[in-house]
Amino acid sequence: MRQGPWTGRYPAAAAMVVFALVPYLALSAALQPIAPIIERDLHMSAQTMTLSSGMANAGYAVGTVLAVLLAQHLPQRRMLVLYAALLVLGSVMAAGAPDAGVYIAGHVLQGLCTSLLLIAAVPPLVVAFSISKLRWTAMILNVCIFGAVALGPLVGGIQAQSHAWRPLFWIIAGIAGAALVLSLLTFQDAPPADPAATRNPLPVGMAAAGCVALFYGASELLTHSFVDVVTLLPLAGGLALIVALLVYQYRAKRPLLCIRPLGSTLPVSGIAVAMCAAASSISAVALTAVLLTDSFTPIHLGLLQFPEFIAALITAVLLGVLFRTRGLHFLVLGGMLSLIAGILVLQSQLPPTSLGMALGSGLVGLGVGGSVAPALFIAGFSLRNNALQRVFAIIELLRAVAAFMVAPVLVHVAMNAGGSAAAGTHTALWICFGIASGGTLLAVSLYALGRVRPPAPAVEAWMSGEAPGWYSPPLLAGIRDSSGAGVLTEPLACDTGGQYGGGPHEGEAAASVADAQPAQ
Image (cartoon, rainbow, N blue to C red):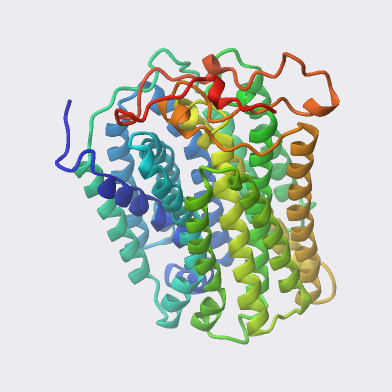
């Protein structure tokens, strides 16, 4: 099998993942302060700019599903190189765009390829190296996804201070180029995951139509009311398509996505937390920052949000320390409580003081960093590791829909509710508080109703591929007769026939299935 000169070297593989994920995720958070400059240079309206970001986010959401379908039937590492090359192309198009059309096409390609790379590159980094590296992978994943987003406002503020935007986009293109080079240096040819899997493109089509409609409607809220046909119809239709996709995949005999096996207590709790944390955190900090745009320079405002990045680093370390213990579950709970506290701090005085903004963004950063990535592992440990690609796909799809759909809706609320921007933002922040609190109460209730005593994962069994990391009881097992019922998963529905390009090292193979199912 073909191999690159750095095949099997963990630092190179980890760097490739970082360079693949950071460009678009950081850029998406950096756009707010530089958007007016891009609009001026490319003769775009604010509505067109918002629509371009919405379609790029739609591409990110759809790419999670498309990546799974392609991985089943095409050589996985060759596709990863192709995704990295397309990310470079999209980044160059956006950076050198002579007009709005080229910019939008490049930015949408950036969003699509980032999620393709996420699904193609992260699972191999998780399962293809030794257990000793898993701790570092968990930390890297947290920093990549949430640290990059948290750093975006400061990066955008620095660029806006120079009254330009292309230098930042060219730096992004350079980072994407580094990801492409590393994908070649670490190349290890791997077969398709499961050539016998379904070739049905309908799930991808439903996800694409639903996400495009949903994010188009959300983008149009900038200039239209919520009840206008151009907004309400796409929002309702897109949401209905996403729900229909979940129902269809749940009932399908040969599903593309792992829906039914995720329908037990721990995965449902983790997914609920990830969605609620993503939906409330992004909106809370962004809405509050808007109130300060006339009071501070872009770089000053970015510095006030910088504690969110520091918090992401702190939670990454905590995740690395706790992810092999039962403390993983309590990290999620602590993260959600911190998120709720951060929203209350931001809401306490509008517009916020500098101290209130820095403290609130730091607490929100601790919240989202301490909840979303650990929730991903809680869901992932509930199935065998050969389903990890599909688990990540469905969670990232739902997380992206929650975050990118709710944020424009709350911006619309902030602009139109009450008699002032501060009054509207106050209302929107109460909605953020309700979403975060509701997700926390739901997760805690599911644990209680499922009679779950937070288990420590049997990482050796999970890494071997022989068993899930723990037993997850059926939903509401505590209030119904679940004696002898409640199989953790339906492995055959989501098993893949191939590997991700490697496996655990010798001597780190598995415990028994019974060891992965601690007594409840």
